[in-house]
Image (cartoon, rainbow, N blue to C red):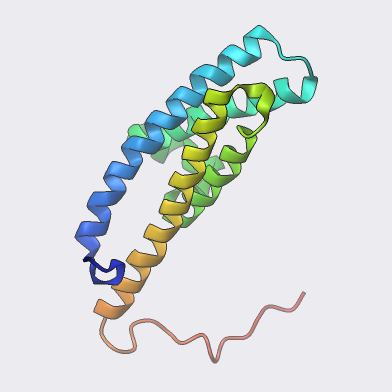
Length: 153
């Protein structure tokens, strides 16, 4: 019985690589089907717009997962939150909700649930890695938030 908090950073990063492959495959399939839905023409304009967004953003996911050059030189300019596991996870969860429309088809619906699950796992990986880094750091390396004040609005 392995506990999540007992995993090392290297073990977590190895699991994140597998997560990259799975989320990349899911986003590739969603890209294909949403592109077909855009060309085929759905009944309502909102569905066409959602399919167009899915097509564009799934292409962004594929580039961010598998193309370091495109990711570092182009995508980070427009989507800087994708460099963090938490930002990537939240982005995947939002895109997964676009797939939950029954008019998109049952396969896209299931792929959307898979993308939401990948997003949740990215957020969990972020917190696990952050916890491991804080526990491995020497005392005083991470400042306490007790003395920090919030910005005035």
